[in-house]
Length: 218
Ligand code: G3P
Image (cartoon, rainbow, N blue to C red):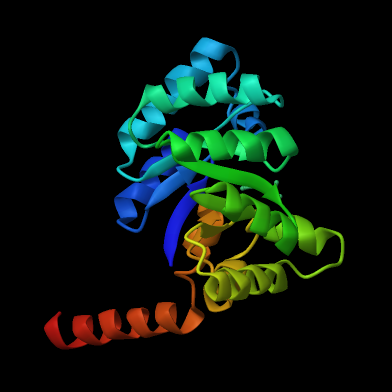
């Protein structure tokens, strides 16, 4: 399973990249606002900067919700850097636009996916990625990981090429469970990637090794 980082924070993106485990970046308007990136020009420059920091795909989300607007904005975003993927919401005009982008060689990430039916529509439209929101499904007392599993099963049966990008990841356990459920990628906050390192026996074992080395080597 590949790792994307779900943030617009440049320091966090660089930290994950420098670990050598980063395959891409996803952003959304909320994450841009959280990082204090406002105004069309600043947002555009920020996407260019992110795209220059990582080799992998960088999702840039459209704000338009009508077909013509999504196509116009998406084509512009895609022109900013070769690794930009146009992130499009799961709405009727979004699905139509994903069909257009797919026919014109522009990669897409269909976002705000909460059901297997939506996942089928996005795959039929030719989305490169779909983003089922694991944490937000859990938030309403459904099972986000079960949704990933259901989509993975039906994509395998139907041989759809759309990749499953598990989003709204809230914990390191979500990452592991998404991998087991068949997600191709998890897009994660940095804290959840760092959480994968943690085990008390690793810390205890390392302290012991270093202490023993010091004892016998001075
Ligand atoms: O990738 C989608 C993500 O940014 C949403 O996460 O935690 O706001 O549900 P969250």
